[in-house]
Image (tube, rainbow, N blue to C red; front, side):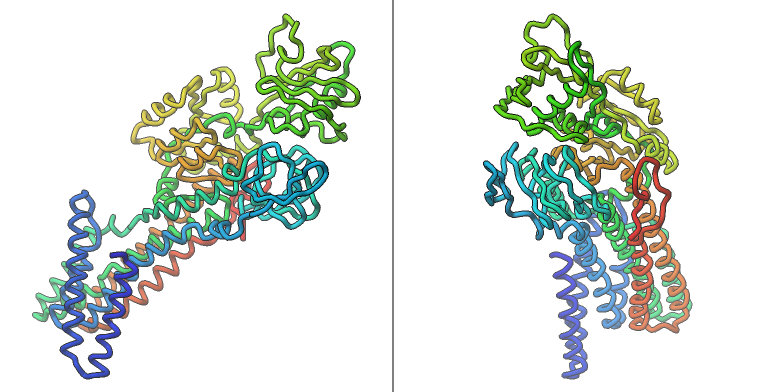
Length: 612
């Protein structure tokens, strides 16, 4: 039986009992139905407790069961009813918290783009978003959502990406920049080229994450369980001594009623759901509540290189023209020929050349796996592999990433690319060390020389290079217990297995693969590595608040038990006092919702934890 139905049944029985005793003056009937229901509930809780004990865990349920049985045994049935309502209410809150863990993101489901404006021969045609194909040209009008992932080829505009990344400031996009589906176009119409179909776009990825979070309930940590044995023993000792000294069994029930662990059970779920809501506001999806605890105590962190430590977006490094050609000419003709291509190198060239107007490309043809040909400014331009643009050459291609250009069937030059280290990477890794992450590793399939160079630049502690996906998993599994929990941060398809194996898998989801996001426990929606530190800081704040709430509950309950042992707190009044304790615990736990100022990490435009 779901906890919500248990709460509904308990409240319903309570209403019937109230009518029977105070409306129809049938006190015995009211006592009987409350006692029957309480006994059934206590038996149900006992069965669940036995299952918990068999799994090697111990909780506070025994104390709750004893309190219910004791109140019913001494005919304090109204007090027993109040305790039952508190317990079923606490369990219902856990269910509710699990469903509401991603409230900020669920709004996306009701606001998804439905249509797109396809540009064909200068005419706009409205189509369903699902019908947009890769390489289609779409027009996004002011105030509209970007329908699918793509890049800008005409126009400049401000885009609101707050629902995707948590960044409230509009972002200016120029020709060559990526556009994420779900972003809102602010001020002028722009033309984009489709890079991903709707099913693979950022917006649909978010929808999948939200649905996955709904299907996989948050495993909320009942922090009170860790203090269950000493707290239960103290309660029994106080209750037993009070009974022995007074000779009155009511005294035993009165002590246990105020010892009921309702506030302890409520404290952690409220704090954790508040922390998860706070991460959502900062552009971070935490799929389950127990990940916050692991993040807060992480001892090791492993990073992939490409797309994680580096930007993953290649930028033009050098333009090396042949004799008779200029760098400006090679860049202009190559960018003009590539302006409608979705290839990552083509987009990098177009973006690099966006300070000058590009020329129209006619007779454009793309040769799969080789490059493109086009007529630009009355020149026949070839851009792509060396063997494609200059079949007769005896030269070998460069060892680095590059594309080659031929103009009018004459080899004109080469454009090289570099994958730059993220500007915030070094400061982020330094901040991780400051947060208690002792060992920061790089696990990469790239060459050792390149990996060592980047590791030295950003402050990596340990480097493992030339790794296959299976090797990354072996390295993660080999981390000793003293170095756990371990975080793995990546963004590509080959990172998905590693993200699943790590104690906490974090996917850079803004430009990463769907497979990585689905395998991860945490997804960062903004292309900002410093959000890893943000997630840890929020997790630490959340767990601190949760533990404070538990200790406050324990302290108040202990004081109330000592007072109740003197006999001055009737059982029903003691049960009602639990409302006060619950309220204090909940209000304290809600402090986990509040963002607190943090120092900005160098290389980022915003503070580590955004203020609302």
